[in-house]
Length: 275
Image (cartoon, rainbow, N blue to C red; front, side, top):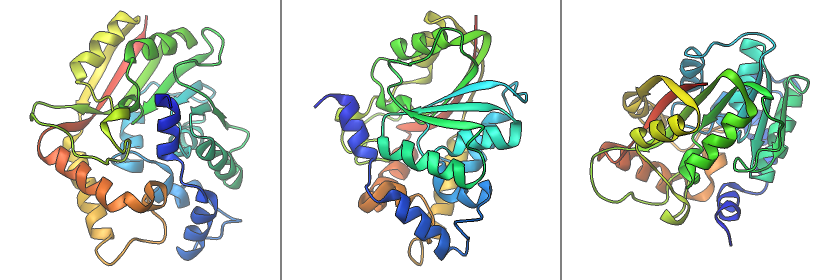
């Protein structure tokens, strides 16, 4: 089985739509009258959740009407945030069919179906014309992609000159040693391709980008993990990322915390401009 099929299988849970709707109801939300913020505990599957999305967006030259691409859009939370808060027109693409279906369902339930759309597809073969987008985002996706140079060249192709590319990935640090698995993005090392920020910068430069911002978010990660531990002290909440990670949630979170604490990885922001 090729890597992309393994990655899609890792993320697919089965029954995710029903689980999220049940979790919303258990949390006191009316699934027929949802607001975007009601979904925040579950639909932003990256370290820091909504806060990380907001703080990355604050670094971007966003304007109403911009056409954006969200690569590896997952359940669609980041794309919905950019559409609702910044007035952007966002297209998401993701390998996992279940994620795409749930993302479109949630967008319709919060009244954003006309501003966001989600497609099933590969980040390595973007099905868009040249210079189609004003900007692109990619949150916790590169860890599943081995050939980041090819990925970045494809992103550059679909961006207009001067467009931005905002990355928020888990990247390798200098701690030394092997990562513990499973982690949220991979069950084993076979689908995990964590690289250093310096390598990202080099591949971006080779692909026609100029890096304009970089920030290590290790402190944000440790705060986020502390909140996860506190929230789960008496069992998982009705709505949370455990619905997305499935039965191995406890092991994935524990290993991720350990990997960050050992200095092996940390989440990093990089923003680049297309030349």
